[in-house]
Image (tube, rainbow, N blue to C red; front, top):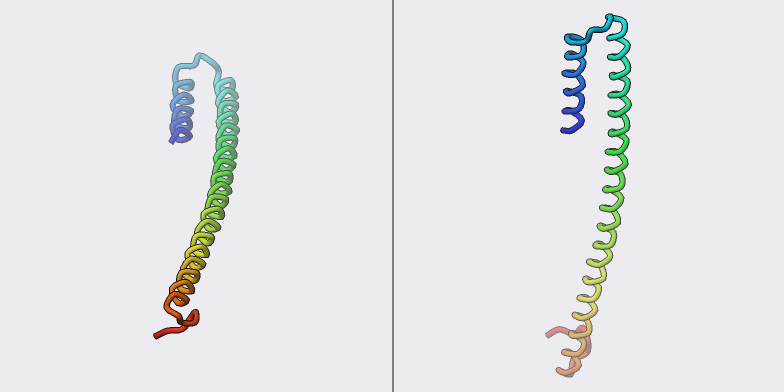
Amino acid sequence: MKLGSFIAGMGVGAVGALVFAPRSGEDTREILSEKMEEGKQYAKGRAQEIRSLATDTVEQGKEVFGRQKKAVAAAAQAAKDTYTRESQTEASEQGKPAGATG
């Protein structure tokens, strides 16, 4: 949104310069050309900043996802181990071999 506002402002400024500037046409065209180049360089710089920020954000997201994935896997394994241990304890208390049903 800010980049669009900047470009729109450049356009309004350029038109104002043409209408109100007491310069020759050649001078005005040179100034406009310089301002357009400045605007283009500004836009390229902002685009690079945004790309860099997006890349950093994606990398951070991947890292967080990896940590969460490991945490969920560890929790699932702990639950499985607890279930197995409790099943074996219950079976031994009832005098049945572990894993036996019925």
